[in-house]
Length: 525
Image (spheres, rainbow, N blue to C red):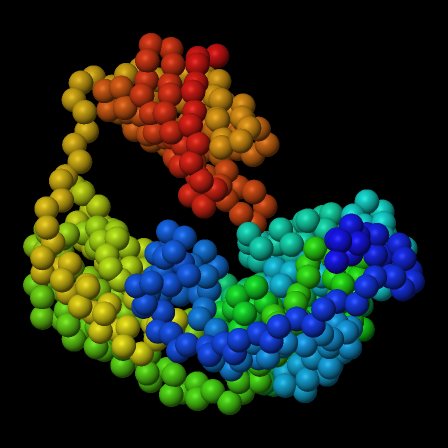
């Protein structure tokens, strides 16, 4: 035992298969049988509460930040079963590939670590194929290093292309796409969406150009239902990527890449367990078999019955609040195959009911059980027309009553909510050129504000270290609020600077949404 403990994984690799001379291990005691309990997700004592985390009822949707979907029983069973065996991962993925091909009506398929990993691996496959030298040279040396993307498809997830080192080339018309294709073009990327469907550069048009020019087309269909026959492959797509942790209700960190067999196999070759550029994208046997189980079950699920069930939950919630003063109900129908479920939007006048939509949202989040809904609207004092939206997609039976009771309680017993007041006094003079230091949780950034002032109204320009955007905001007495949006490719960083003005200084906090808080100081240039 002591001898074995001295060996690292790298030491074992160096033995090149040589046997280790170690004493036989004593037989391990038989493990006690574990009976897996049936859980509701509402238990007061659970593995999360024991580390100080409050689970929630998900009436918002399949957002990664709130852990996507709740995996199906068949998925849990497959992952549990898979955990008991050792297998050769190449052999496993070969078997899964054939099964995913049959289930999806595709040439082949592989399991990935989410749809983002499918984007990464598809890009590498289109750049390097399974050429071992090109694979090892990434991301620095590559012949094909450009990926075309319609401007309407730029999004935060195309970072999966950029992280490979490929350059995204934006196009807006079919003629521009044809002209942009050249020897360096590795792939065309397009996100499936209602906006794409209405564009001259829709998936069918893009696939026709790709076929004409001999360039593979990847369709990002992450949150969509994987219909059979596959609608994107039918239009001529080469590869299609899906999330496993959304409508499929598979493992949250799983995804699926289907389509051309040679490219799917090359994408898998580029990922773990192989020592290529995508080595970090390791998909375990448990996740892989869990994803396969989710796809198997997808074709047995009663999807029409699910839609009727979800609508009945919304009707129950609507029935609890429909007779309250000023309440109006709106059913929002899905626009495409992503997150395909009807949603309920509740409208009311917060002047009459005493609570805004944002205040109801915060109350539900703070309640027991904790409930997350889509963003509530309405704020004091000027925006009292309020809404709250419920998405039933990831709820479980019985949770509709909990959600309905909590919303009804908030609207009928609103409590007291103070109306924020702006500080009195003349607005501080903050027009001018400012040198700004942002103190992040780790590291600092040097930025610049150019502020124009008209009374309490502020406009101007925000120049970051790399990116820049327009400023807007207010100043009341010495309290300053500045907001900007700095575009980053398919993404946007939203900044809110809140602070106090001195004679030649500004200081306060920065809210960057999902990127966290920071603080800032500024001095006149």
